[in-house]
Each structure stands twice: as structure tokens, then as C-alpha cells.
Amino acid sequence: MHKIFSRIVIGLLILFGLYIMLGNLDSLLDYQDFKMIIVYGLDLAKDAIHIYLGFLAWLISVLFFHRSPRTPQVLVLGFVFSLLMELADIRGDWIQYRSPDWMGSLHDIVHTNMIPTLLFIFFRTYKEEEIK
Image (cartoon, rainbow, N blue to C red):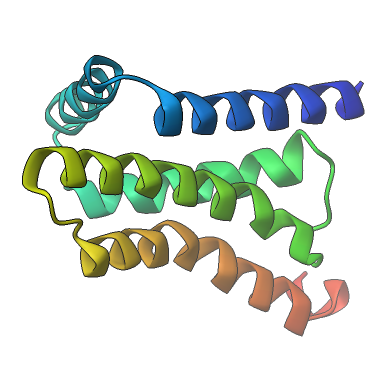
């Protein structure tokens, strides 16, 4: 069952990436509007939302894909997701301002993957007996 679920999620991520990269301007603006609705609706800073999304991707990898938190595979989903989000942001910046915000995108990728990476290091460093 988890193999089917993982293939569906990976397929959806690929389709989302293709839609963002090949979609028209209206779809990209809809994505940016959707992002702003989430930011204002949750009343959180953009950085906090990136941190939560990274942690959510880590949880999905561990709980739904049944990956051990000790394996580097738990980091892949969050990293791919953060890259797709930033590709959409870079494309939006390019269309709107003719200049992508490279440092802002790097900043967002780091924030999205910081907590999962720290959890991976923690679980990799300590044995199960030491955690209990």
C-alpha cells in the first residue's frame, strides 16, 4: 500500500513541477495568490510556513512512506518540494520583476530543510537505547 501511495505523491510532485515550469502566467499568478492567502490566513511569517512545510514533508516520509528517520531518504521529499516551490517563486519573480531573488530562494530552501536535517542528524547520531 505504501508503495502505491509513494508513487502517487511522487507523480503529483512531478506534475506540479511541470505545471509550474510550463504553465501560463495566469496559473503562476494563481499560485502566488494562493501563497498569500495561506500566509495571511494562517497569520504566520513566510519563514515559519517554510519550516512547517519542511517538517510536514519529513513526517510524511517517516509515517506514510515508512522510512526510518536515520536514512537520508527522509530528506528527499522535503528537498524536492522546496525546490519546486522555489522554482515557482523564481519564475514568478522573473515574469514580474525580470530579476529572480536568488538569495531569498536559497534562504527559503534552507528554512524548509533545516528541521528535517537536524532531526536526521539527531536520529543518526544517537542509538535508540540512548533516546529512551
